Amino acid sequence: MPIERLLIANRGEIAVRIIRAAKAMGIHTIQAHSEADADMLAVRMADESICIGPAPAAQSYLNVDAVVAAAKASRADAVHPGYGFMAENAGFVRALDAAGITFVGPSADTIDRMGDKVAARQAAEAAGVPVVPGSKGRLDTVEDAVNVAATLGYPVMIKAAAGGGGKGIRIAQTEEELRKMAPQAQAEANAAFGDGGLYLERAINAPRHIEVQIMGDGTDAVHYFERECSMQRRRQKVWEEAGAACLDEKTRAHLCDTAVALAKAVNYVGAGTLEYLYDSNTGEFFFIEMNTRIQVEHPVTEMLTGTDLVQEMIHVAGGGRLRQSQQDITRTGHAIEVRLNAEDPMMQFLPFPGQVSGLRIPEGDGIRFDHFLYDGYQVPPFYDSLLGKLIVHGKDRDTAIALMITALEGLEIGGLKTTKALHLALARDASVQADEFHTQWLEPWLAAGNLKPSH
Image 1 (cartoon, rainbow, N blue to C red):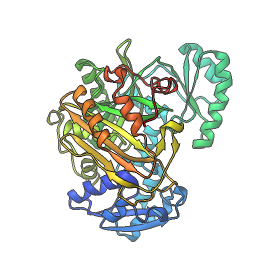
Image 2: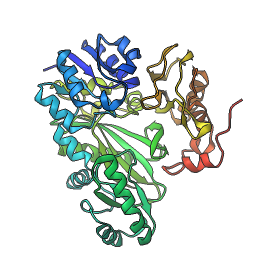
Image 3: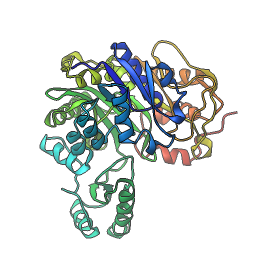
Image 4: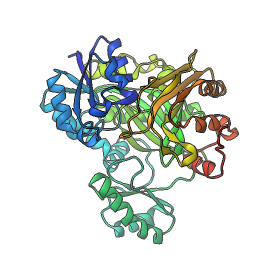
């Protein structure tokens, strides 16, 4: 049944984004919010709103019972989780299923399967998708890890079998390091995810991080090409592009085809992203994980392909079939997104929320700013520091970078510190302009003092 009343169980810029998509489809929008978010832009934009608890996320946005109760009370027939919070929480999906409410995303079983790195790897191998050489299953003891590493060869990457966000990851160059790091990784994974299981992968030197956007309706699946997400700090993405300039057409086609094969193999419903490491030295790519939700960086794909991905995932969640076949989906030009955070990049990225003043948003062809700001808005200190995403689209990569510089120069967010200076410095950097960076590039660049105070 097509969705008529949609509860948005998230906040900030993604809540605004979902409301805009839903309203364009004629869907009644209900914004769930914490007490601290009663005056956020999404609440003002939605047709109605409902409070789900106090400021701490554990008591509001992460409270399954509170969100399900709000969906029932507001007579929502569906819930969109955005990204983060409960977007990949299978228990939340099952609670909605029990209440007869549609989850805009994949099934709980799919989330469970693809959220477990070992199970996801096994599904990828079964679908013929290349995977990084690694352990065949979860490892529960240090001796198990040492034995596997002996067959893989060093260096090895130690990862948590459950969870993500870079938690629990270590790189061991030798057996001695592995014996020291594995218990640390187990403890961190157990604290973060309640599961101390590990798995090992061969560590790839200076890889590129490439991901493929897919959409499925449970029967069929398509891709919307790839994104380059190698610019990372502490394994968190900072700057994203669509497409990946480092790929040739043959590699791009093979990569995207494997993503569709895996999506079809797991009967995927909704928007999803398959993440890969690309070894530019050998031309090999390897599947690492699947994110079973809309991604922060989805707008670059929308700019590249002209498709509203949020509308598409709402459509298929309501029982619709995919509205585009693969040959209908084309790519034009190049798009870049940068994340504007309420952080001071000159002070080790210390969070720096405040009251927004003097807001000036750049406009023009090929410029988009996804945000939740308005003059006088007090950015709360309780949540992620993301303020918005500045996205540009040009006829080629050089044009997009030049447009990004112009757009950043025209963006003003007064009253708080932001990461604007970082992105301007990156856009002007010769290595970035030459597309010569990788997942381990940014932190040494910062440590070398390339980011200078602005005067």
